[in-house]
Image 1: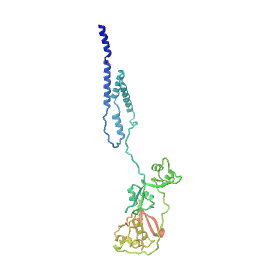
Image 2 (image 1 turned 90 degrees about the vertical axis):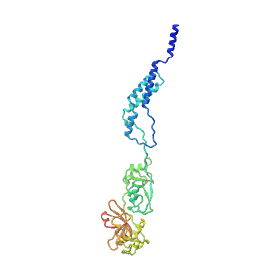
Image 3 (image 1 turned 135 degrees about the horizontal axis):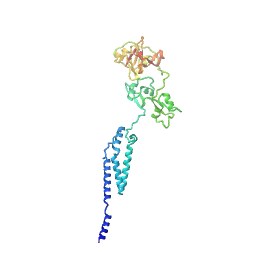
Image 4 (image 1 turned 120 degrees about the horizontal axis):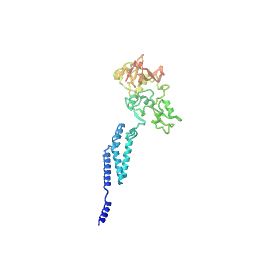
Length: 371
């Protein structure tokens, strides 16, 4: 009977769960829960807006959130060891967690600049297309250039304006996206050839026009950023058909000074050209102002602004001599020099010929200007 009891007792012990294994299982489970709890972060709501992340913020985030503590690593090692010794079902999970934390800890000891984090960068693009602009009354080359953020020369070169700043209302201008020049590629021409011609950077030409693969192709129009047009050899001279006639003179009353009845000046003379050019610019002058020497007085009588300050589109009045002389200011340069066009100046072409010339800043102040 005693033997039967002992046998039964031994049989019962074999079916009971060992106390040591239970303790090991519990300890490993608690350690794993502790590690997971410490490393857990609740989900954060993130807006759909791009966020700029600075290098300092990245390093701070890596240090505070991504670097496991020494306690985390030790706890995970202990949990993995206990689970393995007790042959628990979670042994493989505990081992994986231990390895991961150890790896993160090793990475955290290296240079943080080697760890990169994706950043959302707002894309930017450069406008590379040409723009068409219709000149409004009062526009000049400098005012249009300022409106589009490019140089005045860029507008002149793109629209064959020579050396003028005066613009006629309704004229259509081609506006480049950057300061520079438009160029049509010739056969056999390389980006380096174009850069040398216009004294700019070959790399800028290639990058702006996406020529990295194809290179410049003959006949294609490209923008040459920062390009400078080669100096002109000579000014353009135009002939105006007409016959000589007498030039009237004298100061007239205000009513007649403001009258406009078409060009009543003698063709081929300076006054005839000045009337035509101002009409072209949308800034007409009176039809009966007489010879050049009387234009300033008659302009004042008609209510025009008259002073000694040149401006693009203004009439230059030289009151020397009996007849005097008039021309039209095309441009005021940054150094104060002015460029004018005129007709019937015998030193620069003669009767019925339009010429262009530059007057120095020192001499420009000696003339009168009708605005």
